Length: 150
Image 1 (cartoon, rainbow, N blue to C red):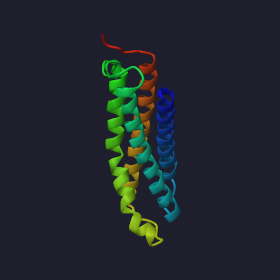
Image 2: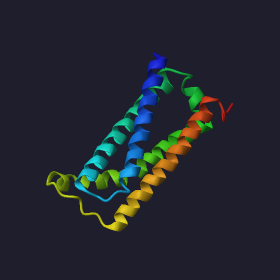
Image 3: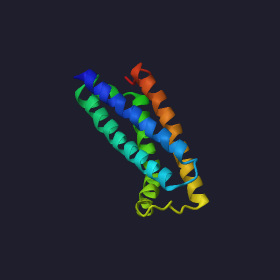
Image 4: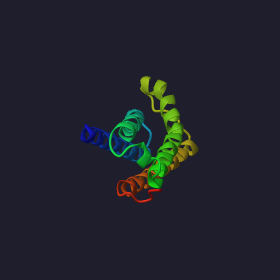
């Protein structure tokens, strides 16, 4: 059962990373109905996979693997949680913006977004990717027992 949950956790994490990478690429393109629709879908996949990563990860911490005592005394794990939360907070702005485009998309129109807003979205997605890279580093360190207290 532990292997199954590890597999599911990794698949959800890869889906999250892929969705964020898709957003990163698409946000650089000219905003058309097609691009806006793809961004909205990528953000949906990002959110769903983030939820799956969180739920499955917590199940692994409390019911499988090494137990909560190991994880909550591991500095890279705590950093991982903090980075995951940071990514979640950062993702609020793009998600709200993408959701605001739904009526324009339904009408077959490209959303009207000013250059400053697009630049802020790009910077936010870049920050999410940077935090994700650090999170992956923390995962590797944690898996090797680096930073274990006590």
